[in-house]
Amino acid sequence: MPSMLDAVVVGAGPNGLTAAVELARRGFAVEVFEAKETIGGGSRTEELTLPGFRHDPCSAVHPLGIGSPAFGAMPLARHGLAWLQPELALAHPFPDGSAAVLTRSVGESAMSLGAQDAGAYRRTVAPYVGHWDTLAEDFLRTPWDGLPRDPYRWTRFGLDALPPATLLARRFRGAKARGLIAGLAAHAIAPTSGIATSGIALLFALAAHEKGWPVPRGGSQAISDALASYLREQGGTIRTGTEVRRLDELPPARAYIFDTSPTALARIAGLGSAYRGYRYGASCFKIDYALSGPVPWTAEEARRAGTVHVGPTAGEIDRALHAAVEGRDPSVPFLITAQPSVVDPSRAPEGRHVFWVYGHVPAGWEGDATDVIERQLERFAPGFRDLVLARATAGPPQLAARNANYVGGDIASGAFAGLQTVIRPKLARVPYATAHPAVFLCSSATPPGPGVHGMSGHHAAKAVWRRLRAA
Image 1 (cartoon, rainbow, N blue to C red):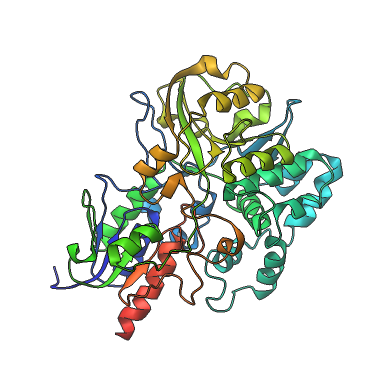
Image 2: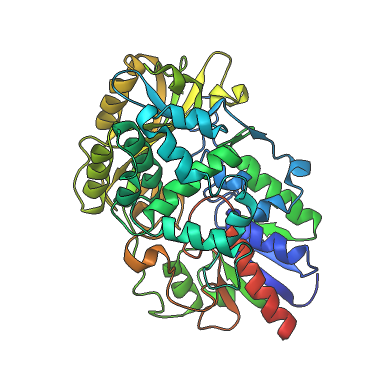
């Protein structure tokens, strides 16, 4: 091993591993330190309930993973990553037993919204369909990092993306389209009246048409394992079970890259109040189920979808998000659910299923949302509770204990509110750099934000190698 490493990465989540890979493949000597005994961060798979049931404690479905420019440039398939596409990317069921759907077909998706809104949906996505690769590169980054690859679509998408999703929903007349848009925007874990929530909704819809919403065979751990395998092939090393409390506990290196919360980085690197203004957002209450059979959705489409959004109207969805952000107990939660075993039978014993669901709750909330979540599920899948063999629940305190980056249980590593929606973690030309010239941040708190796509790690690595080459 060289006397001094080129880079040390703290945190073996997807962004930390991506940053390490990007540097190692360019010939830099890299070592990764992970506090947990296993790698993965928000991309891991564990037997949380019963033997043979493999659950994803954090992320489960990965439209931005399969669509990531960073992952696309790596031979991850050779390292065991296989994407499995459900028949339908998303179903959004309604009380009458029908459902809006997102599929690879824009026409099929549009028609599921009803005749009055099919044309409006086609017109909304038409300018961008077929241009995912440039859109992803132009938007999964810091907006001011050089010229966009496709200036026309970058400008047009920007104008569509910046308004709140409530404004985007006004293009549609029916409750189905408005519910679908609100459900997509809710992935930001912020009210749909917030800035740039239209962009979240549009990006997820386009991902469904262009790349699908797949699950990795075997679970989300497969993404982390493939990145780690590729890193080792490039000469990088990973040390697990090593918690870092101070910078001087790490080996000498020319650069230190943190896949941590800004709060933890400031504490470890001695940066004082550098991120005092950074705000964390609402949390969620997560349940992983072992089921004796498939979820008995009333809507037939929901039985074929990898992801199911549960919340019939835009108003109900927005009220649930407002309650979480404003600190109120959940009463009728909006649910984001995933059923990986619909497309990946290896996730559960034969004939059995795993099911993944969360509803939004206030940061740090210590209550139990199991009953309100299951009451909401029963509205759209009567008899669901009869199938439950076991459940593993995690509220904000458990989520924060499981992953130190989830401050207060915030799985987005920072609130989508006001200017912080587009400027994370603070206003800076290079948001990955810090006041310490050798210390960098690469977590979901940096652009482009949350999701298992590795793009924060990719851009942080770019900032590091520019500095290392200039030194």
